[in-house]
Image 1 (cartoon, rainbow, N blue to C red):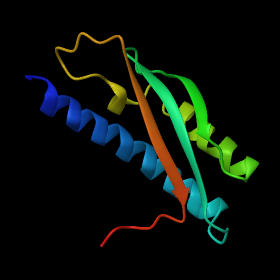
Image 2 (image 1 turned 180 degrees about the vertical axis):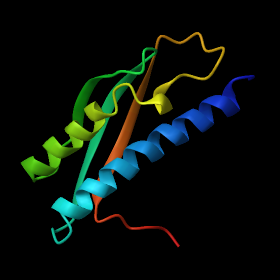
Image 3 (image 1 turned 180 degrees about the horizontal axis):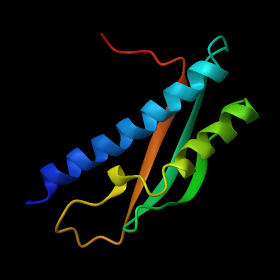
Image 4 (image 1 turned 90 degrees about the vertical axis):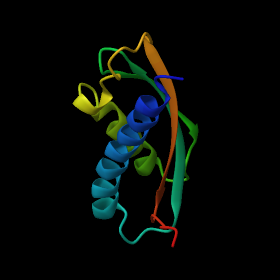
Length: 106
């Protein structure tokens, strides 16, 4: 499919932008917390807005959950959300798992 590479790149860039913002805040607020994790579903609209943000799986920490929702909503208007050229989609549904601490694969 013509758009597959463009869309794969778009998905990776969107996830990376969210993770970078998340990690910056999580390091400050949850540097010494026990492990926390939540899963969020959201919709990216063609106009670079993130809507229908929902916690699919909540952590046990209400502040962590709220921070996660705030981060997603703060992405509104971000240029990284612009759909690839030639896209016919009006919106894209996405999920992301955010956790603290982040454990990198080796």
